[in-house]
Length: 353
Ligand code: IPM
Ligand code: MG
Image (cartoon, rainbow, N blue to C red):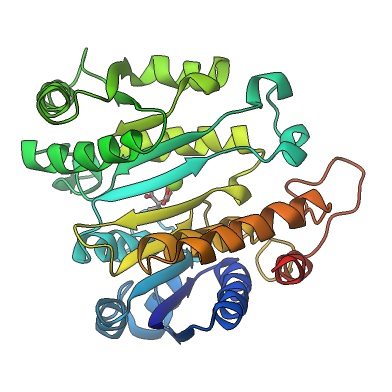
């Protein structure tokens, strides 16, 4: 297969972690006889510095042309002045919106060898296998914003159609797994959540009678994720709740550095794949960031945008083997034991491939 993959390293550790994911894709392409071409473009703070815009036209054009997009991370203290005209994060949000990527899949399945890296007791973590589906192009992230010196507002709004499409996608995923969907909202307070609940009920009873579903309030869900994480199969939730709950859920997997994501639209082609972690400016440029979340995002890219399931599994198995062999970067290495570099972690994956 021929495929064009756009690579947007972004800021901070983005360049270091995407480099390892590109190496893994190159290796798997070679092994399975595919021709993957990579083209890079600027996004976020790096793009602001070079062009004044967080999402330059050339970057968007490349992403539209590409079969899939691999992204590192955006943001950093250099661009985080509250009065800044343009922010790195806007580039990412515009890109998600422009590509119509309304569903963000964030799988959470702790690797047995790193249970000790989690602050949560290992016995609660064994067997956890959650797929969080976060709505990605609506809600408070994209509503009207307004600020004066003394007052500010962010509008949260959803249409029934926006809720329907993400619920359908989550329900289809649940159908292929343990057939349980948990929809998370704040229906005791928010109108958007009450609409969300009604749409979930309508879609699930009419179209997915074979998938069981429940509603859960977001505050209770935040607690339940730590208390009984094995209870969850597929979670579907709105944009901001999904953002917050997945950083929390990353602790089940030991570290933010282990969680990949796939952002999908109506068509599988052109999806965006990125680790859920940020640009980690505190460790950027030191070659110690954990590249596994980005390499695992590359596996999701193979699976969802290129329909290369065997290749996706090969990458996931390679990461799993690397971790089993003790190739652990600082964020998941046991206290007092030696941590390996970003490059060495990438090497361990290549060796396993
Ligand atoms: C994420 C990030 C982004 C988000 C930021 C960088 C805008 O936190 O992908 O989870 O809030 O969506
Ligand atoms: Mg986030």
